[in-house]
Amino acid sequence: MSDCVPERSLASRLRLAVVRLNRRLRAQRTDEDVSLTQLSALSTLHKCGALTPGQLAAKEGVRPPSMTRVIGALEGLGYVERNAHPTDGRQAIVALSERGLAYVHDTISAREAWLDEQLTKLSDTERAVLADAAEIIDRMAEQ
Image 1 (tube, rainbow, N blue to C red):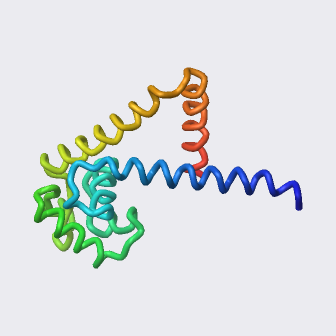
Image 2: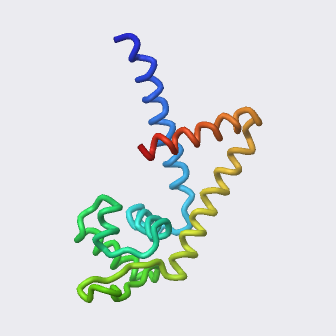
């Protein structure tokens, strides 16, 4: 049992560090009118391209009626556009508008600028450790 304690300790420390860093990055927002749920949907559309509302809901892990409300709010802000599905007239395709794409890019830039500033405060060795850790965390996240 004592063999598990260091791993649990590392798991706990890593989880807390990731949560805290994520919270700090989320605070670097360019527009407080967009909820974190809406921002997540915009980010998914940015990463995956145009999707049906059902596909977007599945990727976001929410029910379609909830995603319909999110899409409606984003459409009202001019951040997404709905277009007819090319092969299924019963469905729509949701895509980032030019304004939505600019918003996502601005948000990414603000977050990366904050993170770049924090990284400049570290030593070369610490930055190298974080570069290795980023690769490891990416591998873990994809499993």
